[in-house]
Image 1 (cartoon, rainbow over the protein chains, first blue to last red):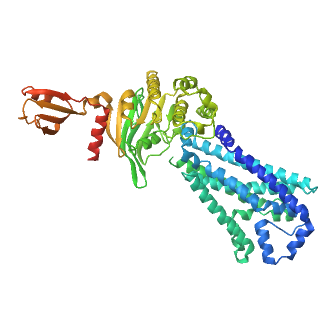
Image 2 (image 1 turned 60 degrees about the vertical axis):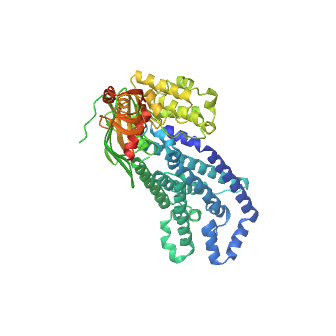
Image 3 (image 1 turned 90 degrees about the vertical axis):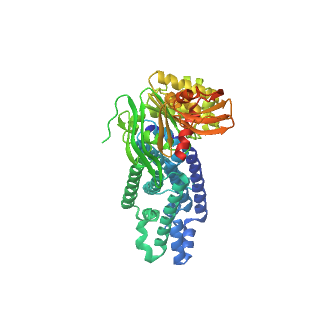
Amino acid sequence: MVYVFLFSLRTVWRPMVFVSLIILLFLLLIGFVWNSLGDTLAIGLMELLPDDLKKLLESQFGFMPAAGVEGWLASVSRHPIFIVLFTAYSIAVGAGSISREIETGDILFVLSKPISRTAFIAGKIMASVTGIFILQLVYLLGLIASLRFFGATTNMDLFIYLVINSFLLFILINAMAVCFSAFGNEASWAIGRSVMVILLMYFVDFVSNIWEPAASYGFISLFHYYDPGNIVLDQKVPWQDFAVLSLGSSAIYLVSGVAFRKRDI
Amino acid sequence: MPVLPDEETVIDFTGVTKQFRSTKALDKVNLILKKGEILGFLGPNGAGKTTAIRIMTGFIKPTSGTVYFLGKDAWLNRAEIAAQVGFVPDSINTYQMSSGIDLLEYWSELQGRDPVLREELLNRLDFPSSALSRPVRTYSQGMAKKLSIVQALQHDPSVIILDEPTTSLDPLVQQTLFTILKEFKSKGSTVFMSSHNLNDVQRVCDRIAMINNGSIIAEGDVSKLIDNAERSVEIKFSNRNTPDLSKITGVANIVVDNEIVRLKVKGSIKHLLQALKTQSVDDLAIERPNLDSVFLSYYETEEE
């Protein structure tokens, strides 16, 4: 398992470095824009908007009527660029973990060695989780650096809560992609199915946030359990969200492992 | 209830069927691989060779029937069995971004045994050492195939399974590979080799099994199969009044062209020679059968 883990990690270091650089650049850019606008102006602008448009912006971009650094943190954490970047990485790494190896025939070389399929998939999952963890670490350090760059300070615990919540969300997205990968024979098939499910969930979350009658269905979506706005307002650990995301990803990884053990290659 | 194989049996297929949705890839296949032999597994493309190999290596679960490998169920004990096996898959599109040496190291670590034969194999297969540090995507098909062979044999396995090993190899390297396989055999290793190249099999195998449409259509020693094969005979008689040879045992497909008679003989030719003793024969040509004709005769029979 350790060899599969290390080898898999080596094969994803290039996209990891690329995504890390993009994260850092966008954090700096967003920090710069926020700093130029100033807290008061941003809040003032939001107040001027009609309620429906305000809801839309809150839902889509995480804009929230919170002043200061906390407002900036919540907005950045829900910013589409980061959602898209982390989702793309989590799906690409997860969906490719098994089905791409089957597609290329690489898996025949590996599984003809004395290694169980459980150890193989565990090594792959560990490499995915480690990659996402490293990206979240870069994201956390980037957030801190960006704030320091503009001379702002805030409660450090908030950073940790936000990043753990983000990490767990993208682990769950990765678990879904690994699951599709464990059933499929082609990476493109697994990526396609994963993207479809994630887009559907994002849509459900979006509609449940802006349309009152749909609000009670929001729990179906995994994005429902990632709410940076609530974290900065409540300043508390969102244990329930953490639990749902952790249990969800563990269960899906388990299903992937069982399916992979039983399937033909 | 399947009978457990004896110590001399390395692989034992009993009534193995594999159904992929509407396609029956294998149909009640029975096959034995004995310790210390080189078995050639022959068949045209799509006959079921790769499915059979993937079942014996634990990649595919049979729909019905049993497969024992070294006395253990091949599906349930695949990782344990793999410790004894060197496997050359038909695919050579391995991790394109990694270097050859990184891959050999990786596979060796997974195998958990020292790559005692690596250097020797690389030299004998004429693999340039400078290429080892290059990414595999820069390799030719032949080089990738050599790398695949080295990864399978570098830890000195006791059982070697090769799926179309000579594809992309030049004739010189093919010959070297056959020599290496014979050396493994002389050390007591067992070799199972699939191929659709009849010459490969004839040059290296002790025994062959032929598969077509998912069923074994012939199995036995190479020399015995050749002896029993259909051979073409051309007889030139002294005049156009040729005798009726159709009643002779084994004779078929008689074509008369004036004083020349062409026919096929299956099995022993002695009955024909006996009959010709009393005839006035000017010339007699008997084509010695090879594995091609054995294969084609079985294959054509199946098609009919």
